[in-house]
Picture (cartoon, rainbow, N blue to C red):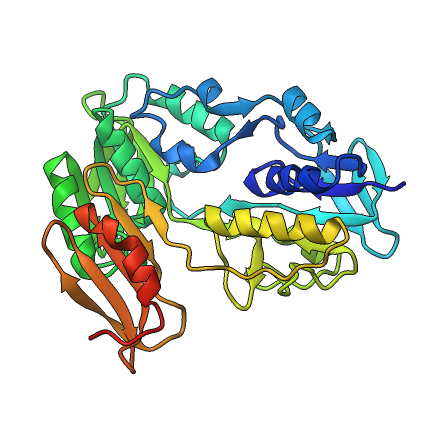
Length: 385
């Protein structure tokens, strides 16, 4: 029997394998991954420093254990060269493999800014466990880190770094940090809290170049902003966001847009090819968060086991790992006209995003207000009093 092939060994790929084995213990399963194949929780990368977690500490199962757990053959450190959807064939640098069904769990890649200067190639990004290992090594002896990006990833890394005693300069193009994920009022409080802990904000600014310092009295790199300001830093970390990996699918003739386009059954435009996780676009949206991956893993596993199942995403608030100022957000839906309203500001902020009919469609809760999550979810779609 031809195997089910999963390309990718992150939360999405291994998630499908785990859920499939709950339903079918014996279906032949082949997992192909370009990395080492060790299982780890990727969202932990932006909170691991302050918890004194080494790369090895973050591994929950090495590749051999994962292979046993999933009763799967895992081809690790393997590059997929192309997919032939007509022949139902995956071609890799270790051979070609036929499939009965194919699951694309390709993840997302770091958006790399086009920067001028001889220090541009020294800019670091952290998108996997091995990036994190290199980042930890670079931090030895460092004091000040410049972070490019004031969104979710940038703010979580800033939080992690200051929790470990580093100084951080955060550069972003928005009025306040975490916008537009959260409203300006909530971002303003985060701005103040982090400033008190050693973060220097450079907002409504962008980086034009990164230059290597020529002075022995300065730190290694100079970050030049569009207003001429210069930030001197030991390390420059790019955290401007991620972009769905779509090249492999596109070259196979599979429909892509901002992500690999899938329907409600997580089917791509090619027969017997499914996709999930950070690499997909569903109903015009990308969903680069943990909870959608968990739901999608269960749905695809049921379909692969002979129970075709559509995905129905419930409200999925996102926890932002900002130490000292916890934030929970259900993002405002894209393309919907509306506004953020302050509902309470005692013991944290409670804010709701309402449409033109005053119906609640999203919310932000901070600090003590996070206990109101269930009540806010229950109120979704209803008019605020």
